[in-house]
Length: 261
Image 1 (cartoon, rainbow, N blue to C red):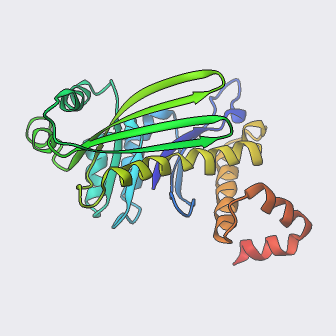
Image 2 (image 1 turned 90 degrees about the vertical axis):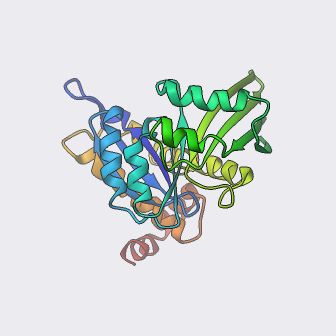
């Protein structure tokens, strides 16, 4: 399940900023299970921790960006027998330094996996290196007792405009027998479905950022309605939201029946 936020830009006014919404979104079925509004992105941290306690996590993995790499968030998921895969960035210098040092050591015992994708003139190569050797240090010295593995992800993207490369560090509570490097790459790819399967669809297919609805809670309510429609269409087995909407436009009775199921 991916956790990420989206700002409804078209709902900004002279007196109030655009509302920021964040949601928990399933990787495989692409359904929004929880969404709420926060004042800004930094307010996601306590609200996400509270929201995580409302969802069923047993047997599930939560993927999230570095904003939510917090011990309290991990504890909320682990308390319900769930797991996490989280990014580590520079504003957590002790964690970044520890993981970077781990993979800079040539004696570190690790495993690797790679993927290579081509899509619409875009070539993306990813390599992940994973080790469990840092877990004792994280638990005893940095107060991260639930972390089982650390990872280094190198991503190289080549397009007509050139090539860019980035390195990202990650932590997960999944042990090596639960998630090998290939599985972790799969989870990382799954996380971005919230961008392509929810945020992009609401913006492009539903025109959310062009909407001039601004009053009170109306932007949040309409975002929730769009989430419901997207979820209901995915449950029919369709992955093409735009085509499904066109079909329902010609058969409104089918659309109503689907919403009332």
